[in-house]
Image (tube, rainbow, N blue to C red):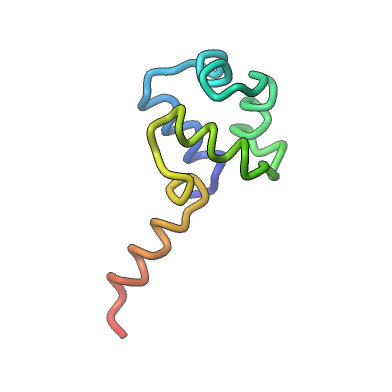
Amino acid sequence: MDISAKLKRAREQAGLTQAELAKKAGVKQARISLWESGKRQQMSLEHLRSIARALGVSADFLIGTWEDLQEEAATPS
């Protein structure tokens, strides 16, 4: 799952609208929309941290590092 899908899923699970997340994270709602739609792929580390904190998830979760590590650990060597 890519960051856009994870961002949207985490936002919905937190019960937030894009506007509410934008306000909590200190970014514009239009930017949240672009990230969720995949129309904007890049995100600064500052925005990544702010969004992760606002959603109560780790930045690793949003970018896929945590899941990648879990898959590696589950795969027999």
